[in-house]
Image 1 (tube, rainbow, N blue to C red):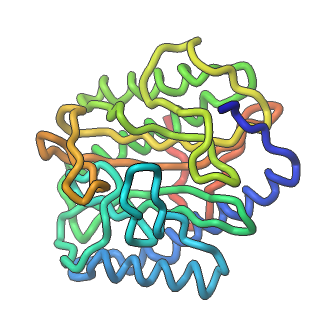
Image 2: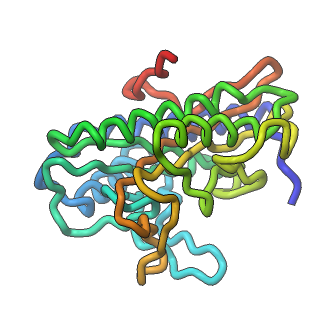
Length: 264
């Protein structure tokens, strides 16, 4: 399928949906602490989305072809879970790291973002992994402009991750987004500069690198959704949705509580 170039009206509606998605992460941040369950975090986010924002949680009952419907409203990926962790009734423990992935639908448009959280006091190794992954995402964002290639984004992410001693998950990637949860293009987090799709104003897609402390290999658990590192090493992920503008890019999933862009 071709890449959809968003109209001015599409872009305005995407700005709203993406800001609301980011605000869910701001809302839930104070609740992430030892003893809370991810099921409780899911319930809080669901109620906030539906009753306060008037948005629809996009993951709930989402069912790509051949997959069972996703049973919850958010994804909660802990420690060695790479992505798509399903909230459950197990309490979070001090020292764990957690990715919360939020996608909302507002007026038919999707906003998608994720953020890393620390449960109590985490190890310096976990903090470094989350920091480098955050830098990877922003280095990728900095490459977004008309005339750049998707390979420019993947290349800078891969180089920063691997030079820091980490590996890049290759089976999952960023994606176009709009009226559909997942659209073209696929945004790989590895690659070569000057290769891949040429970027043009009006494209909207996510950049969401998944970086492993150990090897890049993964396995999918029996629930069909939860993806973990094969060697059980820690994994981290951050995600923003970006718009290609006439002069560069606009990050659509910024909010008052979003961490600042790193200084390189």
